[in-house]
Length: 78
Image (tube, rainbow, N blue to C red; front, side, top):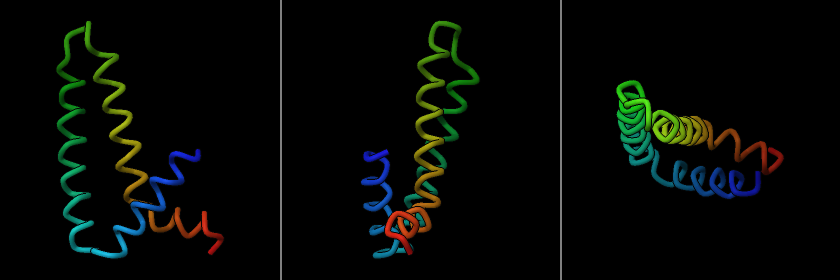
């Protein structure tokens, strides 16, 4: 969890310092995540696990980024 904590805190700082740019970043991440899901759905049998790993990681990052401010507040005990 330590790696996630560092990422959460850094992302929350960025989200707070530039909300408009953070929103653009999240939109870009969503587009990328969708693209990777499409690759998974259309991947040949030999690459399904690789694409699944990428899709899972991007989904996790996107979820973390969307809730980073709330998660950071919890980590800081707010």
